[in-house]
Length: 335
Image (cartoon, helix red, strand yellow):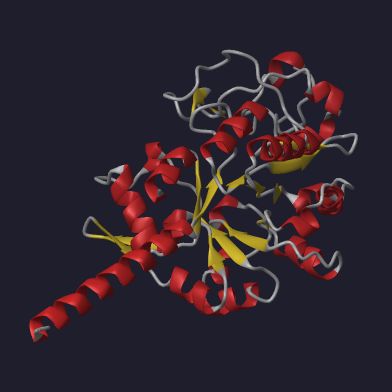
């Protein structure tokens, strides 16, 4: 004889199982982006770092793309060279009037003579992250976009994985002012390597005009991501504060598929408590995915462990993925 209590207990167990399965499925759908490759462990944007990130089983590896004097595409976070290479030592007389060394003033052959090192703060001449890879140890060089792509695709073949790439077109306004159409060069290269059809790619940019060109002029089917900075950074001529409004997010949805906001733009701190704002929910309402940057162990909110912060990011903010300097830890967390 089946009692009323027994039926009730069976239903409760079934509901619990459904909730568990749904939760697991949601976690598995989160996209992990290795920020500047394995930048928590090796100098950023190196092929060695890309290979390390690939081995973790991330969803995407991020290359930031800039252009050389001879129109080659190389992987660097900045359009300057002095924060992550020994350019001042090798080419001491090649700085512009502002004292900075610009990638666009050097040929690929010249760039290949430089050593890549951990990031420096130029104002203090000290390392930004002193506990990371030893400064000026081993030898790392600036990779080209084609070298990066061929490494990822080669590893995909031999490991039977499908790790994607998540390129950022860096400073397109600056490049245009220097007579370089970096947007056209990047989309041409990506198409040459089959990414228009592959499905394992996003293209990101801080400048809306670049994304709009990709959608209308180049008619790409590749998902596009509008990066959102703080207006104080002077990242481009765009108004980022306006982008974060409900109306701004609706506008973004007319030309992009996702946003990449700064993590700090997604929550507020009240009396020591971290509370989500409405940016993620408004973005989802507009049909946009949300991939914030950057998860770093060195920059966790005060009083939070790594697990506490990732719980907050995925369970309370409910983002769709995250850029991380320590993407291996995010892989383990989501597993």
